[in-house]
Image (cartoon, rainbow, N blue to C red; front, top):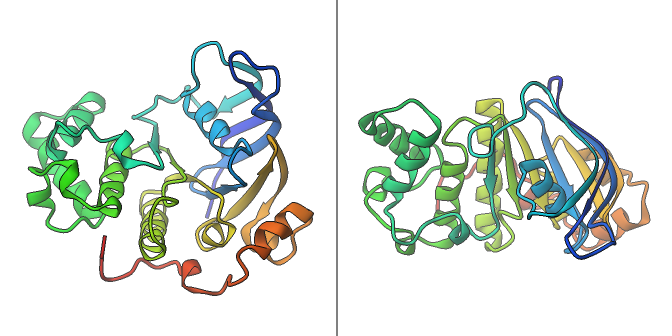
Length: 265
C-alpha cells in the first residue's frame, strides 16, 4: 500500500548551464510514500536529469523553473535520500575498505559510535545479500564483481534509512541474471523498509516487474504515466508502444518479483 505524497513536482523544467533547451521540460509528477515508481525512456530523454534535480545533484548555475514540493522539511542527500548510480565505482572509494566506507557514512548521518556503526555496517551487507558480510568489511572494491559492488553501493545508499531511494540506471551495466537479482533486492528493500523507490531505466520490461506505477519520458517531456499494468497492457502513447515492442517477452523471468535464493553476483 502507498501513502500520502512524499514529493509533488509541478511544471518542472531544468536548463543546463550554457544552454537554452530544457533537459526536463514542464514535468508534473507525484511520488507517494512507500510506492515504487519506474521512470523510463531512452538515453537523453531527461529521466536522470529529473532524478538529479530531485536529489539536489545538479551542477551550479543550472536553472530550475517550476516546483519541487516535499512533505515536511527539505530532505538531505545521504540521510533522507539515498542515491544508487549506474556505475558503483562512482560511489565507492577504491582506497578505503568497504567497512571503512560504511562506518564513515553511518557516523556522518546517525548518532553511532564506531563499534555500533561497524555492527550496523555488517547488518547492511547481510540485508543486501552480499556473501560473507563479515569478511567483506575488510575487503576493497576491486575484490568484488560488478554485481557485488552494486549491492555494496545499495547498502551505502540505505545506510541512514532514507525515505526515498533513487536507483539511476542501477542495473543497466549488469548482465540479465544479475539485473533480475538486483531488481528483486530493490523490491524487497522498499517493501521491508516502507521506502519510496524511484527506479530509472530504459527497460520497460524490467520496470514492469518492479514498479507500482510507470512514468514515460521522451525528449525532456513526460508523455505517459499510470499504474504499471495499465501502461504495459494498454499504453496510450505510440512511443510507449515502441518501447514495449522492443521488449516483447513481458512474461519472462525479468518480471519475476521475489529475490532469487542463490546470489551469484
